Image 1 (cartoon, rainbow, N blue to C red):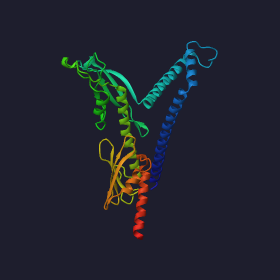
Image 2 (image 1 turned 180 degrees about the vertical axis):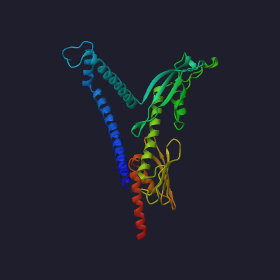
Image 3 (image 1 turned 90 degrees about the vertical axis):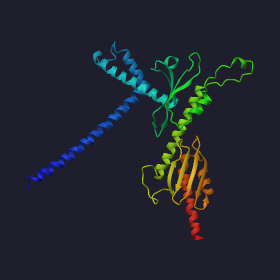
Image 4 (image 1 turned 45 degrees about the vertical axis):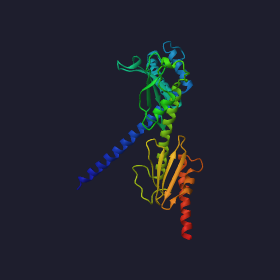
Length: 325
């Protein structure tokens, strides 16, 4: 019996020691992240950049202004700081390009020996940003079907099928037409459609941004109402009486709403995130008052939760008036 008492004490001490180690490791990680953040902020300031350039210029010619560092000790330190500063500058420039430009250009070479235009390919990288993070970029690769011409055609792309890329290509990047026959040269010719890669990229980025913003907005509403995919909610736990909210198409423009009392609605979302059309049916026919509530105010998807709350309040008033009547 006396031998069991130390064993329990040893187990308790081991448990306390493990918890202390876990806490120390978490503190080390937090302090490392804070040090990295503070270092990035310091290296991004103009005063520190000027001071670093000054020390770098005088690293090989030490003066009396640097008595605390010998040339042998200063050179590795300055080299490490300079490398960190350059990496921070490149990272900042990349973030600014991705956040401000949204679309960047680059050139690559097709390894296929039988490719058009000697394998020269012009690429466009389109960024998408949602939920406070960058999504994997989309790529549009183009080449010249006729090397002597400036016309472009789409070679490869990673655009999702829900984006109307063929329609945008026909509008902004039409294929070059063949020259007229000799019998048709005397007839008045129509002006050939001009290609505009700038307009194509702008329209394509607008479509991609609108698509991801619609998905993000509906996802936010689902989480707010507690009806997101993967969550189990009973009829008594749902907010504002809405049981289901989901997309019915791949483009993320049509949504379906199902209420607890049996109402079913369909709505169409525009490119700017507004509800363009809405139809709601129930057991007793169409609910035009609910449709007006959903389409009221600015009609954006971001404020759909507020309008659903107004619909729930209106339904409660109807039920109260019906019960008193």
